[in-house]
Image (cartoon, rainbow, N blue to C red; front, side, top):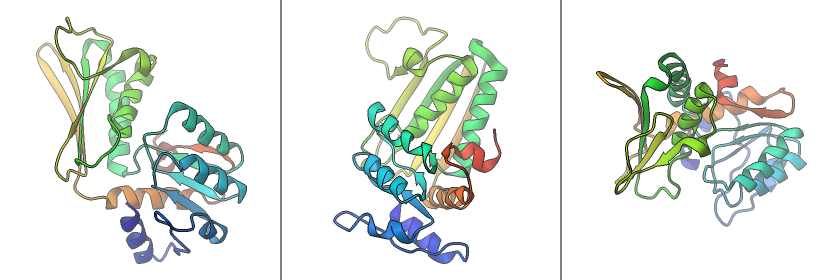
Length: 232
């Protein structure tokens, strides 16, 4: 992701890359020269990145996933002092999938069983993906339910008959798959499938850069890619 962001930023006349940091580098000196910081690092340091970015009053785009609830809350607190986007996925196509998933759930209602299947490369650390969780949250918004109450992460053994309220979430890992997500709405007699497949990381990077540009001049607060894309 870092290499993709650097390449796309350097190719665009809209952006000037003033610094970047990798493992072992000075993480914070480039922040002073920046208008916005984009974090695709690791969930264990995102809270520190957010704190240092807020201290300097810069806009922040966070694409890292896998945070604990406690760390996520610490990060979101920084939105009180700076404009921030904290999204599980920045690809425009994936965010369109988020929107369509919510609208489809609203239209079809609970009579359709909802299942989510995601696949990523063998090196991905967290499961299910942040994108898969967001897709489930879109369904929960339509149902007015809480994800913790309805999520079903895989099935094994004598599980009993499927309940109408549960949302199945299934994570596949293998090879070099960048990212694939499918949402199934299944009823007796028909099935609707919504799918996005990413063939490289440029779609994520271009969306993150678009988000950084959109944040310029915005008031402090936590925004979403729905705000950036006008999908509210």
